[in-house]
Image (cartoon, rainbow, N blue to C red; front, side, top):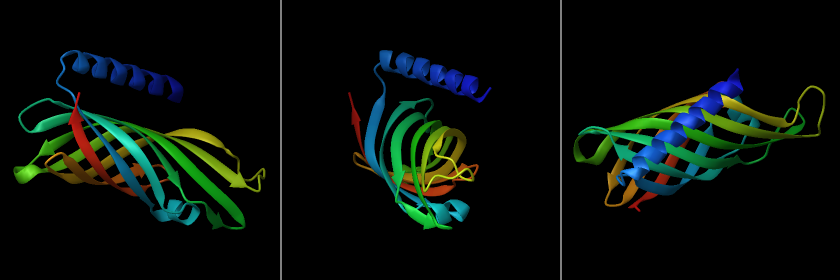
Length: 171
């Protein structure tokens, strides 16, 4: 059932981006990400780094729809005699609401496809990948063609605080 939901989500996202791009009103941003794990995830993962690309499309006067694709990897961490190594591909859609002076509130919904490597392998912990539903809430600021965002990502067992600095451009 999870896979069907993910495939439907990707199909809607793909269709939406194609329709928006056909109207030639889409703006892109590419940037670097910092991911600071919190809670139990912070015990098993170190600081994360990555990259992401976001497409934006104006929906109303102060509202912009977004679609984001990225890659994150967290530093290996020792926990309970095991070495944990995490990476993820976030696929998210959301919206920004602009307040005054280029400040905005930001919400995203989608999923992270996690890859986990554990050394040594045991029957207690398994290597593998899993897709996890994600909710991201945060705020940001744009100045000239630069976009700075701080988000808190709520994922079942892998919550983290994310910071992104990106350059915006139009094709």
